[in-house]
Length: 523
Image (tube, rainbow, N blue to C red; front, side, top):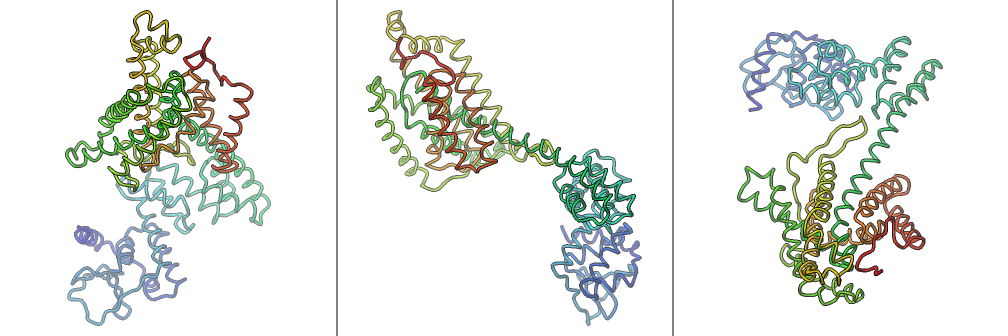
């Protein structure tokens, strides 16, 4: 395929080849600086006849016979200056060697020529490539592409690229005009260009204008960083919310200190991995939709495991928190070892569906990953479903009744033992949903849940034991606080500061942000 494309390019470009002989000879036989200057000379006029030669050099397909430079393809060649076909090829040929420095300059030159491509994707890629740094000698070609360009995503990139070139190589008036145009941008690369001019340019007027534009660009970048920090905080808060929602039922509403909650999150993640593996083996054409099956599977598997634990162990330990803590801690170790036996001790990878790959370029320095956006939406959907179930259904009414007054609920016919099992299954099922979501953010391993059990308890206690609204507020507050502190002090110090804050907060306000009477708090 590559050979066919090359032949087509040669066939189309051969009649148009009419390059300067001196430039071609310097490109083939000159020293390092002469060869670099020759590449720039081929580019600066925007003559597309130079493309076949540059492509051939990049592909090590150029040879020389004395002073004649030939573009080689198989048993044929094309004179790089005249476009004349040469067949058969002379025997006394030498390879034209391209070193790393020259290859990089050739690739930049080809990127500049790609600005003239009819393919939008090629032009966009070339514009992004040149936006990070282009030689001012390419200005004429960039201006030629800018005059042709109509795409609203590509044209601003070219305008900024052209302004950057003019700022470095034009006369004083054009440089000042370019600096003002760059001041309307919000690109980190532009900040670097302006900073260099603001600090080191010999002209005081240019320095002053560059400093003014730099402040404007920096202001936009600061807003972008704040927006990115806010999104990161909400994203972490949504993860903490998913991890803590199940615990808000098993601990907050039922009063059960479930140290195996993290392992139930881990089971949900492994259930997602198993569904992914099934789809890859048996339904590869529908692989991008495996999450639609993984969500209910992860809920059901974790809920069933939780209900089994409640029936077999936890039911006999209600009202005995220390024994419950020790028993569920032992269960957590058993579940970890069981997963290691079934799936192995190494982490497994859960692949994101295509629609969760990549991200949204919200600002020039802010990319919002689709995986995080979907998880925020998923957390909101799970929260809404849980709210509706607890407030609008018969099961929710029974759970609230048993939570508020177990004896009275039993007297009016509520099957309290069955409600305990169903409520515990609901809480552990939501933990499974958290595992499904977390599998989209990183690898899945037997110790996955260990990283979230402490955070989950902190969210529930900080928000108020038994109060679901408090869980939501606490998750968002802790997520934002963590990310804000991380930007100043790093992740470890941020965790320590948050933990110390919660300890002092609970000392002052033991009921948390919100207080609600439940089974653990008798009237």
